[in-house]
Length: 207
Image (tube, one colour):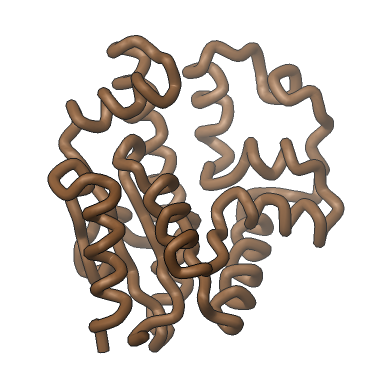
């Protein structure tokens, strides 16, 4: 196989998580998504819910997103005291360390979290970006999360904004810039299975 690491970035509602799990099953590779949250919580003895709440977010956007989803406030929403020493920059450094350790071992899929920027020059990494038309994403979110159309549209806009701001703030780049990826795929055109097939082909044939 040509590549032993896959970074998978995706627009919210384009099926990135499901496709990553399908690829992990086919390849028998480890998928790192929420697993990164658990690893940080374990290594640094921080409440997992707190890491999950801050993950791929920038401080100035946390309260905005909590309000967007109809929750009262950060501490009341998660009912945990945030560690005073942990800020977003420190969380990003923790994430970077784990991503680099995972890449060193190989045979892994890293979903989001700026993995393509962290491993930008890694010779064995394939960087993939998944997208889909807005209507297709809305339909997927409605089905997956039981939201109505307006709620799904709002969720998509909010999550895309968070991911874009995260990459811009900590990696000084445009999240959607195609020059940061090896392969860009419209998951709605190919379907989840077809998208997985194309990524497998690219893993095997990309020099």
